[in-house]
Length: 262
Image (cartoon, rainbow, N blue to C red; front, side, top):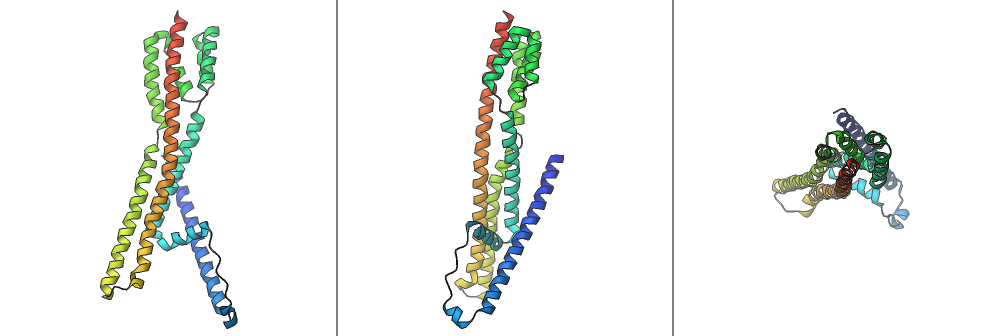
């Protein structure tokens, strides 16, 4: 819970900083355009060069500002929270990855040389879910192979839950971001038709700006969903890889315990 509040607080600070920077940049661009227009002479106006194309980042900032702070801010919040959880999960999963073959060899040598206690010491000095499962199985080895197998299966489920922790939030943000974008688009279209009704005339210039702003929310929502989907698929693949290693290592451990009892 403390981690969640800390993450939320940092996210709000980041959003406030980003919004302020975007607003300042928009104001500075407006002031520069006004100064250029005021100081221009007729001769310069005739020889006015072609404006340079804006970069991708500048164009993205411009479109974000045009979309409005309402839905755009919520979509940005989904991106920040989703990326924060995804990065935390990636770091955790990378730290949880263990060289299973090396650990299995070390446990086998320890069992042959010093028995169960020596093997447990090897597992205590190794990080990762595979080592934790090994330790639980070795800790129940004195009660029989069946008891050790049950402990391995039960603790494997616990470790799998730790690996999948908070992953469902990423899938929520993947679904929520485009939904919010579509909602912003629908609301923008309703406002555009309200303008048409109030004016009593179908003028393209009257509703073009509103429709463009409305569609921007959908574009940014889809962009956020695509980015988070890439991270989500990587995390799921990483979890599957670790779970497969856990299952293979568990079978190997039971075989070692059976061979050690003979």
